[in-house]
Image 1 (tube, rainbow, N blue to C red):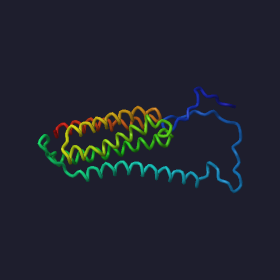
Image 2: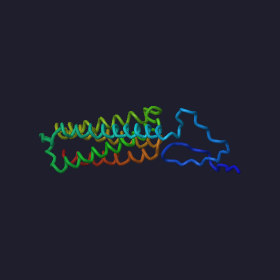
Image 3: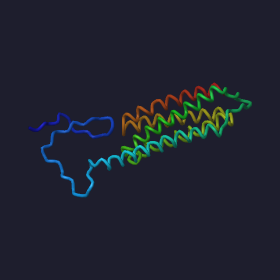
Image 4: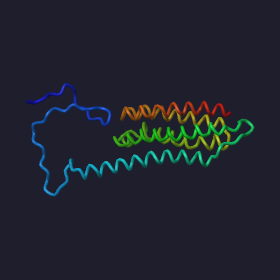
Length: 197
């Protein structure tokens, strides 16, 4: 007896479950000496490559942001700005590194589904712009004490994260949802930047 699908089959990745009708055709027999798609060794190899690429993506973004904070130092005061407190710098550092790690996870999810190559203007460009603005903020706001330049970086981070929410959401709704806290963090960082001015 055949089951019929009540809705069209969707195979869009991690966020949707597809209802597939029962197929009466026999399963393909494995070719002697050849690997099949259900071969455990092949699946394990793909899983290891996927995990490796995830670790590289998240580590690169988080390390870039952490290095930017390390190089910029604890902050300095100028005529127009006062030196930020150590607690404020620690919160900014921890929040920025965490936000970039989450954004990298979202970008990896989009990359795994082919979205970075399929729609680079809507996914890759805002992600790269947001990452560069996040890496530039510590040097401008903390090291140089340029408050307005720091606000411009925060605006670029918020705009890039908002564009990522929209672009990532088209490819993978979960990735779009993961990018939302990064946009909120950019706004919070702008408030902290304003208090340092």
